[in-house]
Length: 234
Image (cartoon, rainbow, N blue to C red; front, side, top):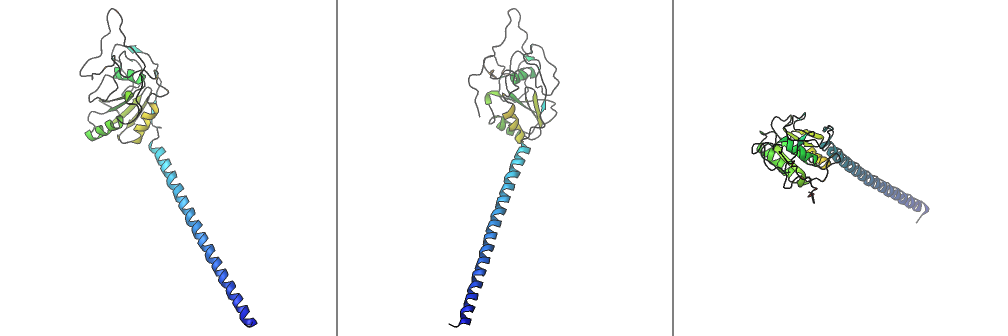
C-alpha cells in the first residue's frame, strides 16, 4: 500500500469515527431530551392532579361560629342559622340515622354536640340527588355519628353541618361533602367527643311523628349521656 493510500485510509476511518460519534451524541441528546420531556409532563400531570384535588376538596367556604355547649332546654328554640349549628338544644338527642322526613332541630343540635355531622337537603331535591346523598352518608366517616334529613327553606339545595361549622353545597357528588365529614365529624370542636349518638334515650321519631318532649314534672328526669362503646369507622 502506498503512502498516499494509507493516508487516505486513515482519513476515511477518522471521518467514519467522527460521524459515528456525532450519531451517538445525537442519539444520546434525543434520548435524554425525550426522557426529560416525559419527566416534565409527568411532573405537570401530578402537579395538576394535586392542585385540582386540593381545589375540589377545599373547605375555605365553610362558615364557623362559636357556641357555648351544655345549654339544655325543654322549649322550642329560635336559631340564627338554617339549619342550626349550635346553641340551646333539647335534653334528648336525635338517633343518628338517615331520615326521609324533617326532624326537630332541638334534637339534632344535641347530636351535633356529641360529634355528629348533619346532612340536610331541600324537600324538593331530585330523588337521584337524594339517593346520592344517602350513598355518601352511608359510606363516609363514622356511621354512628351520621345524621341526614330533609329541611325546609334551606339557603342552598344541600347544607352539611357540625357543631359550629357549616357548608352550603349544590351537588351531592361534590368532593367537599366528604372532606367536610372527615374533618368535622367528632372533630376538635366537638363539645362532648365520644358521647353516644344513639342508645335507649335517643329520639328516633321525626317531627311529624312526635312533638318535642314536655318538661318532666316532679322528680327531674334527664337522659343518660354515655360514651359510645365503639364508633364504627368507615
